[in-house]
Image (cartoon, rainbow, N blue to C red; front, side, top):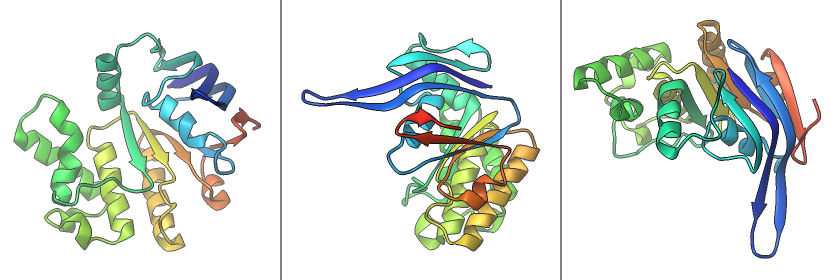
Amino acid sequence: MISLQNVEKVYRTSSIETLALNNINLDVKKGEFVSIMGPSGCGKSTLLNIMGLLDEPSNGTIELDGKRVNSYRDKELAHLRNQKLGFIFQSFHLINDLSVLDNVEIPLLYRTGSAKQRRDLAVEALEKVGLSNRMKHFPKQLSGGQKQRVAIARAIVGRPEIILADEPTGNLDSVMGNEILSILKKLNEDGATIVMVTHDDAMARQTHRLVRLFDGTQVL
């Protein structure tokens, strides 16, 4: 599903050059659940952003579902992200002025389809994460675990083939964290390919494969 070949990422300013990723070669197969671990600042989130087409590598190639995407224009990349990828972030990124249901519908606004179709898909996604009774609530009325479940529903509402999760349990206690991991494992069992950045060894051990980074280099 995802193939990175000789990927490097360099951040440059007028006075300094920082090598964030160095010669990354990584293949994620369809149906895998892969964890990415490493110390803070080692390039985990940078790698996830490149895999999710949110950032461009300085060198190397990216293939998504067998198609090389380096030369794609911004509009083409945005279409791919909307159709094939779902994103889950540590900080939820919910819009406080919108209801839970409206937050989940957001990715569908960039697709064709009626308001009823969007609403039906959003309801279905919320049912999958066990929040069908919270659809009319607002983010400020939810716990951290509930907010993350809303974020997961938003990520899966468009039925993406790939889910990219950046520290999805990082702001949660162990009980809520395990609930979120259980949801991700169920989504994986249902066919989603998942790549998850995490600091938690216990979480990582429950996925299919572990990738470790150190100072921007893949060491496992």
